Length: 448
Image (cartoon, rainbow, N blue to C red; front, side):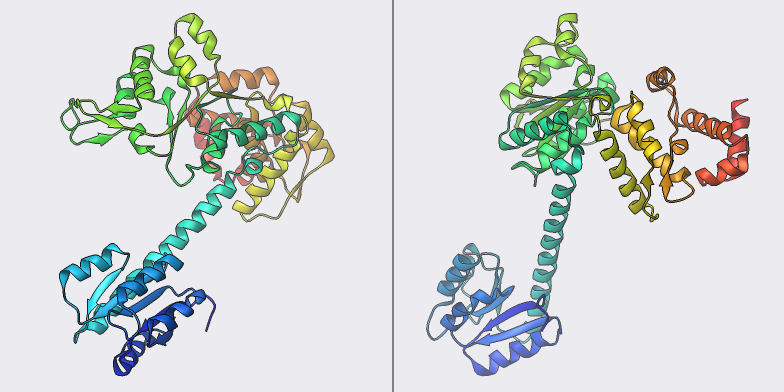
C-alpha cells in the first residue's frame, strides 16, 4: 500500500459482519483496511495512525464508549464511526458527545450510509490538509527575510522589532515614506504571531470617503440609512480574533476619531442603526507616512488617540539609506519576476548595479520593483545592463510620484520614454512591451 493511503480500522467481533464491512470498504482501492475482533487489539495498533475506526458498540472485552474514549485520548484526530444494533437515543447522544463522528445502525442500507460517511470524512481530512499547507505557504511568504529583504543594519533592526511584535498583542505603529513596505511589515507581524490562523484585514483610510468610514469600520444594520438594504458587518468584526491594519491613519477625519478611540478603549463597537454593543478582539497595527505628533500639534489628530496608537513603533528607512540592500532586493525581484513569467534567469551587470546604487529611489521599494520588472522585460539576453534601467532624473521622479496621474497617463509617459530610447520606432517599442503597434498609435493619438 502507498504510505499516503487512507487507513481504516474495522472493529467488529461478529466474523461475518466484520468481513461484510471490510468487503464494502475495500471496493475503494484508495482505502487500506485492517480488521480487529476486540477493542484491545485495535488500541494496541493505534500507533499506525488510522484515519477512521468503525467500532462495534458491543465488543467481547470492552464497551464501545470506553474504546472511543481511549482512541480520542491517544489521537483525537482519528474519526470514529459507531456501528451497532443499539438504537437508544440517549446512548447515541452520549457517544456523539464523547467525539464519535457518526452512529450507524446495522441495517440493509448500511453499505451506502457507511461509504458516504467515510467519503465525507476523507474530504474533510483533505480540506484540512490543504488549509495546513496554505497556512505554511503564507507563513513562509511573510517570514521576516522574505518580507523585508536585506542585510543592512537598518534591515536587521526591523527584523528585531518585528520579532518583538510577534511575541505580544501590543499595538504597532509603522511609519515610513510611501513605498517602503508598511503593509508587508504588518502582514509579517500577523502571520508570525499567535493570531496567524485568524483574519488579516487591511483598511486604507485615505481611500474611503469620509461619510462611509464609520460604516466601513463598524458596520450597519438593515435600514440604518438610505441604501442599507441588509445588515453589513464592519472591518472590526471581520478582523475579530485576528489583526486589523489601519493604513494611512493620519488621513482619518478628526470628527470620527472619537468613535474609533471609544472602540479601542471599550473593545466593542456599535453598528450604525443599532444600540447593541458587539465585543471585539483584534490586534491593531497602524501605518502612516506622516509624523503623527506633528499632526496632533496641527490639530488634525487627537492626542489621546495618538497615545493609544503609539505602542511599538517601527520606522522603515527609505531605500536610499539601506545601502547594498538595493542590489539584494533587485536580485530578489528579478528571480521572482522570471519565475512568475517563465523566463530564463537573468542577472545584473556591474554597470547596472552601479547605476541602481547611485539613484535615490524617491518611490522606495515599490519604485525599485517596477524598475526591475521593466528592465527584465526590456533585456534582450540573460544580462540586465544599465541601459535597461529606466530611471528618471530625481527631481522629475519626485514630481512624478506626487502627481495624481491616471494609469493611462503613466502608460503614455512610459511609451514616450521608450520611443525616445529606440529612435521613435513604434514597432520596436511594441515588441518590448508585448503590445500591438496599433495600441501605441492609439495612445499617442488620444493625447492630441
